[in-house]
Length: 266
Length: 312
Image (tube, rainbow over all chains, first blue to last red; front, side, top):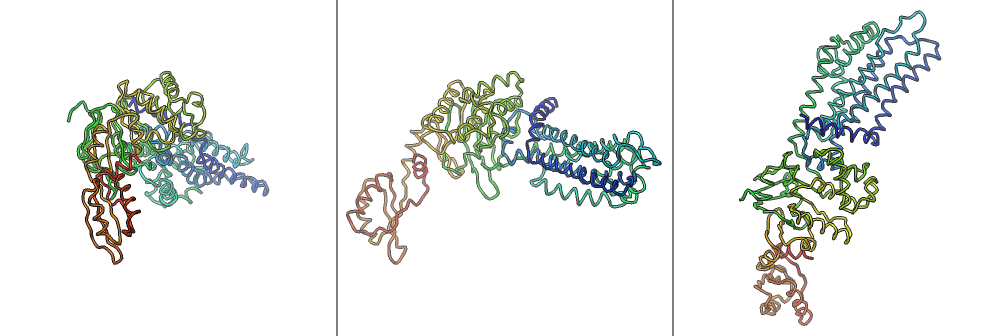
């Protein structure tokens, strides 16, 4: 375990800054900018019509655009390649012939991707909320509940960490993680996560939504209920489920990664 | 097989789907410097990848320093590997790459720094070690790959075509380096498809072709062994019988068979012990007489044919 943590830490340090030199990072930055642009347009439109944004619209925007679309997409772009990149570049040979657990490659490189993902998503969410909410609530409307901004930011980062772990694991398990990850994001999470019923509990987005919705039912409540028909679970329980999903994905991928051989072209 | 062997293989086979990479290889290497020779596609890289545990056998077994190599962390402390593929972390410097791999090998930051600098110095890369490898020439990249393989002072050094991309001076430097490694007690196994390079470093060779072990031992012994195997040459000629009569008396010729294969010409199958002198004689005969030679080809891939290819 010590060897795994040590090697993972070394790889994390080595690859943390390398990730910003990749095209994937540029794509991810572009993706996190999309909701900001959309929020800016909404803001301008509201100002043009001299209206204030109903809080529920903010909640729905955060859920639908940010949590359900941008968070998994950014995670997919950045994290699915952490192992696949080493294989495609044929540099994995150097790592495989070091006296360290192979799982350290997956864990270290995932962490080096997860941190920038979390930071990017946090910045994106912060900007989106500030743009949509404005500096202060409009006169005559309810004040924003305490801690609601923090809840959105934490949910975005949490989503980034969990999805990036899932997609990093996917990259270690399959040959075309990007394609399968897109299918997973839009077909599985997008469809199953929005279908009314207990099937939602089979998706990551349900637990993220639970973490986001449950403490602020007034803010995110009615419209979200109508749109997603979600019955959120307690945030603590949602957190535990997310941790279990992440842990299971990483353990499974590490187990497979340790036993699998990769035939590299000469 | 002895437990002191550096490498032991028993009926080792590796298949890539329907393609045979290595087939029924049984051998044992006592250590020292050994050249793994064979033409391109012979199975050299497959064997080396099996040795360093990058891939697993499809059948049989392999032991390196008495251990099964796949995923064997303890073995990797004693193993250095220079892969054939020209793959490096392009955005890192040569120094950063070697240092990172040393850190992953368990060395402290300070020792990794010292070892990386020393290894790169041995490969004459000190002046450029802090430049990104994407700016390196092919030869410099090869030196980085070699540097990372020796930096941790492995007991067994495995190199896949280590002279690739190097100029003549660079080749000499690498040969000297490997020789020094061997003199210092490191076991060295390196592959090459150029026998000339191998001869400069060691007389011990392992010759493989089409995934099979053809010969093993000291180069003169292998040469003698190979020379005993006649090589077949197919000749198409309009007056094949007359040509056969002219050839049968030559001392290089072992046998001549005449067989009609087409309407316009006959085909001769000639077995010769020395293909070079035979072709010279044939040239003379063909120039002096009118046998109507229409085709000439070395028909088989016998041991000598492979050997001829290697020394060409």
